[in-house]
Image 1 (cartoon, rainbow, N blue to C red):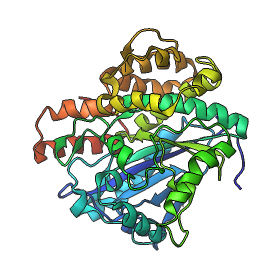
Image 2: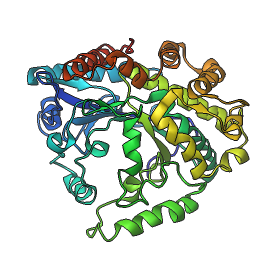
Image 3: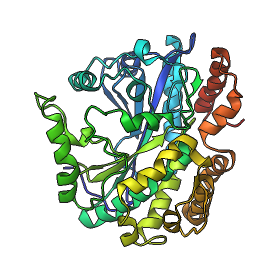
Image 4: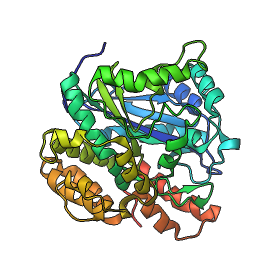
Length: 408
């Protein structure tokens, strides 16, 4: 059992990036080569000081994460960026580089997907057998995960209640997947549009994305984990899957490490943007947990269906969506219909005194100029030729290398 921490005492952040070939801009399924270059021999995990590297389900995606819990979020942008430049240096002789955003804009998952073939591959094989992972929702997704600790049931109740309330608003802050296979999908957060139905073969796994109203470990096991275990049993005959990993809601409780992991955040163009978004989300959660906004009773009263009905159109329109559910707005001390962009501006205003000034510029760029999805579509300017998409996304790759926000 890992050490237990109290609310907001430490954090765990995970960032996923795709590898692309610099000659043709296609995904490059060579994470095993990269990890071998770095380590001298093939390994699935590398401890690189305060940041760790690891493989993912598909062979073109690498995950960078805080190497264990960290107390200081304000250093992470620089730490992640140092690792990104190191990886790009290793990739250069291989004619490859990292590309940010939550989805490759030109990838064809049927022809371009290569599953990870090394350690842990039996789990990935089983997933592939059940769900067919050659689809955008499996093989063309990069996200940011935020892990937040809780000490006991009392802290879990407060944290889970607050996270459920904030989940619907997340795509309005960080949607970054508007283009797939060279087309505007009509969804600013196409990653989450796929996320909803990705595991339709076993609907118990994702549920309604918004977790159920469960506020203790016992309730969580009986309401969420047991139905998942029951549903997977006929397909997992060798008992190799763990309910902690099978639970695919937008926020998942990890009782094996006493944390809740938020999974609805699309990855941005650079760590500066990613960490700024994490900080704003965390400071907003503190406002809810410490009852500076709605009471715990009010937060707990919301059923998943009503929260999902708020989330669903935000997946499509992100920050531009107007929220007219007054009861929901009142949780944040707002009383009239307003856009998601304005809700986040309001929450930022409340949280700003507790946010380090190094994050102001990134947050304000996102709040004023729109989500990365909005900025990408503006830059594409309705020219969906492969040449133009490649040119725009090449600029985004430069943003990652330089740790600068994408501006149009």
